Amino acid sequence: MSNQNFNDIQIGTKTVWAGEKEVLVHGASQVPVVVSVAYTYDDMDAWFDVAIGKRPGHIYGRNTNPTVQAFEDKVRVLENAEAATSFSTGMAAISNVLHTFLKPGDRVVTIKDTYGGTNKIFSEFLPKLNIEVTLCNTGNHEEMEAEIAKGCTIVYLETPTNPTVKITDIERMAKAGKAVGALVVVDNTFATPINQNPLQLGADLVLHSATKFLGGHADALGGVVCGSNELVEQIYHYREINGATMDPWAAYLLLRGMKTLKLRVEQQAKNAMAIAKYLEQHELVEQVFYPGLETHVHHDIAKKQMRGFGGMLSFSLKGGMDTVRVVLPKLKYANRAANLGAVETTYGPARTTSHVECTVEERKALGIPEGLVRLSAGIEDTEDLIADLEQAFQSLSQASLRS
Image (cartoon, rainbow, N blue to C red):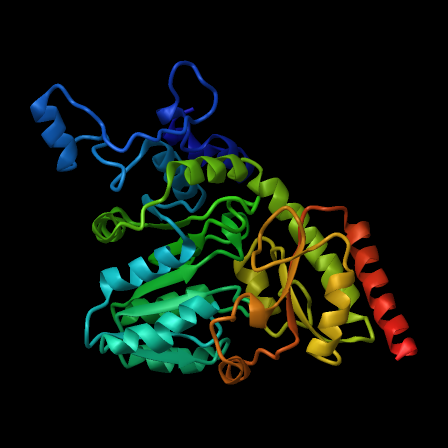
């Protein structure tokens, strides 16, 4: 199947077939793991042409790799982009994009509710380079438009956000960014290409921590950025020199995981919605954050720009961390870990997962209580996950009776 046919097929078929045929060898049906660091040429002129990008090919593993290329091509097709380039981690993707296009004196307009590591770049590292960063209240589109109108180099969005799954209107912010000539960058990790395509909503670049939903099995690190040929070429050049290269074995694992992306995301979203509704009615739960709930403050925006609401939610429990300490260890079908997007359901307090890099005061300023629990729904049977929560809550009641 060749690339020109991908516009004519559905996204589930794309997850299986896109980007693979060009690198298959020896009649194999699966992409090979190419671990060679260098590639040999007998024709000196052909070698030179590949080295300067005049013709396709590979020179050195820090630059490109056939297995990695297949991964990049698959994500590129899923995001309807001209080009894609990959990285060793999701944070490498984020930092490389920012450092590619920012210089001292530039300005970034973003939201307060980005992932903790991203927030650290904005609050700690970029200011050291004399780059101004304005953090707007997430969901306050008027405030953000006013700040963008003052002029900026990059408008950076994360939607849904980690961990409170807040939503920003991508199309609206992209319009504001383009009016001042800014690049609009969207972290699409939580949504995945199954549920949301920011480039189609006006963004210039879309990025993912491929470690999460794209891979889906918690066994490979990676990041990826998609966009126009012109922009991605600049990011690739920065990455090839600075060296945050994706490992070919990681690329293979991510490729294999992505074949079931649509199936996984659909079940994860089904589970997340059911769990959110269950938690919303539970007497021990203070608040539930999930964009699929009609009670979510940004439900209408999510409904407009997303095809599905995803597998991520968060919730706060009465009693804060004291309650969390009792409930989470009682769960039978859950990993308590600093990861998300995997086939297994995963729970974790924001203070030890998404925002462990932040102080208590910083988390409080971001509206993240110490007892906030992030939940990444897996692909288990819905009924079992609900029953598991129920027995964990019952253990809390029993513990209270004994005390």
